[in-house]
Length: 293
Image 1 (cartoon, rainbow, N blue to C red):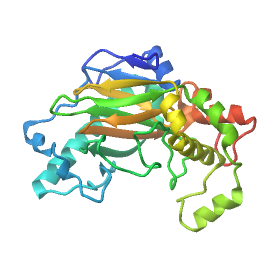
Image 2: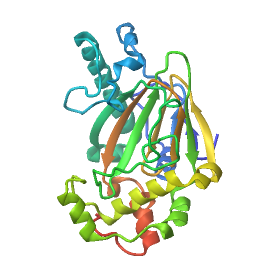
Image 3: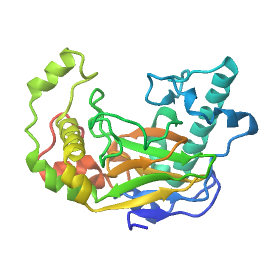
Image 4: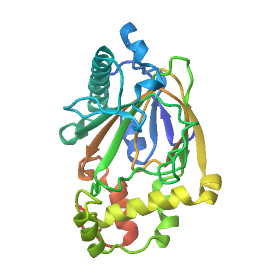
């Protein structure tokens, strides 16, 4: 595998001890791959492994940390079983992250848990929404001012089909190439977007840069084809972890996956200078407007 993919042994979600090499890999934009760490379904949860559980107009099925399941359709019994399954996954993902990265624990904010039962390879989307293209995660309507996006993924495919990703070059190498193409940040435009309700809060210079990088990456066909990248197959019954705002990734195929998202201010990671905010601040040569340092 690529040097950006680190395999980690073991099949227990709890009781793991922090290892410096894992932190270094994660915070440099790598992926931690746990090939034997499975999220196991009970017998009564197996019927939830069907694509029709997702409501037609929803991209994925999700559940906030405190809230009901969204984006699903089914019987009352199915929806309750789905809610219980997602809560159980959230609990195990929290155990994993707290055990591996104790410094993060007090500063993590739980975001929604998601269940993705749809086959990726056959899904048709616009170029901007197409996750089959290399990208870093950024949110057009929800500025995060440099907060990290930490994600835990588990492949629960019952037919033993892998989740296939492309993992790209280091974030800083990509940013050095595309930053000269990005138009400058305009504060008046950020205020206008918030006033019109396009964004839920004021878009910072950091958010502007991240969105521009996301869009430039996805629409550059030459980069998608020729940029340094590695194809990785995450086996059924495995789990992997990355900062998806830093790891260049694309999802080529796979069906039936669980995912848990955490947000965290970058100053609470072990190496804040390794965060996208730290890297972009260094490359820009000045503090990024509207972003905490």
